Structure formats: structure tokens, C-alpha cells
Image 1 (cartoon, rainbow, N blue to C red):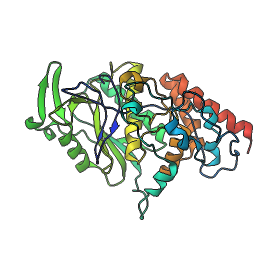
Image 2 (image 1 turned 30 degrees about the horizontal axis):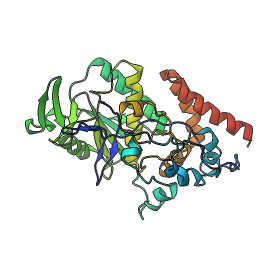
Image 3 (image 1 turned 135 degrees about the vertical axis):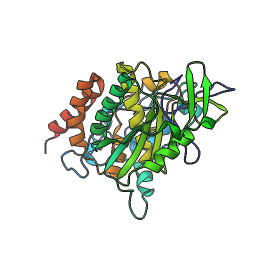
Image 4 (image 1 turned 90 degrees about the horizontal axis):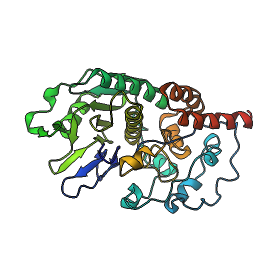
Length: 337
């Protein structure tokens, strides 16, 4: 990722995961990480927090106040004091350039189709193009962590054929070829299994979405629940940094495919980001508000998720999100049944 690392929710059905315009050299991307939370649908084990509607601390982004005040289900409402309010944007940050209104849990619920959310058994990943052994290990580790992150199976599809990207959608650059995202998304959409919640393709080849763009980290079609991400700018494949970026980008983009918009309430994996610096500063876990959305969307048992995700983060070498989940688990234990 050039100065940025994730994805940006664009106008229409496209979701650009970070890009730099040729003429302006302005990165347009969206975020990755986020932090705490866990909860059980209607668990009575934790009472509502009396501090839930307290004013936001100085330096918190005022636009996120209504989202911080929205009452969540009890198990997640009590976690709000553990979450960090979204900081007021600095010049050039995502919210400075894109002052989004945000999304309440009620907004997501209102978007539920009359027939219910699209059903699915598993998330699927696919690859396209050559991969080194280190890149293959990176993607397999990413798959394992995403399965725990979403508490759903994450399975591999057969690799997509490179022939899906015809010469008309390839262009050279100094460090190797670039492929346009459109034919890859078409190929992913054509291969999407009937039981797929969503499908993400990964490639080590650099990407661009349109001829006038310099590059993009990835792109998604939320309505079709498909996307593609490039590893080309995420760092050395065998590094912890590349793993954190790949997992965060995957969780963020798959979250968009589930209907989650960018988070404006707390520091969260669903925050938008306009640079690599901004993206790398965000947490790897969802905030209580976004975790509530995942609970609603996937009928997620957030307590069970926290029990599984904390050791998974530690095993992967990321103690901060593990400590965040430990704090939530401790709070729930102290509250009693």
C-alpha cells in the first residue's frame, strides 16, 4: 500500500481499497483494524453501562457522538468504556477528506432485505497469479485468523486462471505488471459458490481499477459480495506487518460485504484511512458498535468469539488485541451470570 492500506467505500457498488490518482497523487483508501468486544445476542449477564451516554472526551470526533450513544445489546453496551472514541481527524486523514455520516446499528437493521440477509455457510478465498512460498504461507495464516475472527469457516476455492485477465487489462510498470481489477472481480463473481457468505481473491500482482488510476490495493463489489486484494504493497510476506495488514484488510473488506459502513464511533478495524500511517495506527479488532453489527448480521456469539480470538492473536504474535479481548472477558466474569 503506498500511503495507505485498505479500502474505501466508493459511490455505487464499487469499493476501492486504497488508491492513488495519477495526476493528483492523492491516496484514497479505507481502513483496517479495530479493537475490542464480544457479546451474546440477548445475554442478561451484563447490565447496561451507566456511562453509555456520557459526553465524549476532548479530542473525540464530534460526528461520532450519536453512534457512541446508541444503546447496544447488554453484553456489548458494557464494553463501551473499554473502547477509544474515534479521534478528531487531522488534516489529510480519512474523515478530514471524507466526513462520512457513519452508520448506526439501526441503519444496518433497516437495510435488512424483506426475505432476510443472504444466507451463507462460509467465506471463501481464492488466488490468482503467481505466489511465492512466503506469500502462500501468509495467505494460509490469514485464512486461519479470519475463520476465528468471523467465527465461520473460511475455505479455499481453486485458483482463478491467469487467462481471466486478458492482455487488454494488463499494463507494465517499473517493478512488474499491473492487472485491472474488473476481469478479476468478474471471474470471482462467476465462481462464487451458492453457500458463500462472501468471496475475496488475493494476488501478488499490483492492481489498478481504471486506466486513469495509478494503483489500488484492492476493490470490492459489496452488492455481489466479492472482492480482490493485492499483496504487492503490503510489505514483506514473511513479516508480522504484512500479516497484520492482510488480516485487517480482509476483515475490513469482508465487513463491507456484510453491509458494514466505515466506523465513526470508536477506533476500529472498520475506520476509514487515507494513508498507511493512519491505517497502521488503527486496531485489529472491531469496536463494540461494529461488533454489534456483526452479531446482528451473522448471529455471532461475541463471547465465544472473544474466548477463541484472544489466544489466536497471541499465537500470531499480536498481544495488543489479545489484551483488549482479555479486558472484555474479565469485565464479563466480574459482572457474573
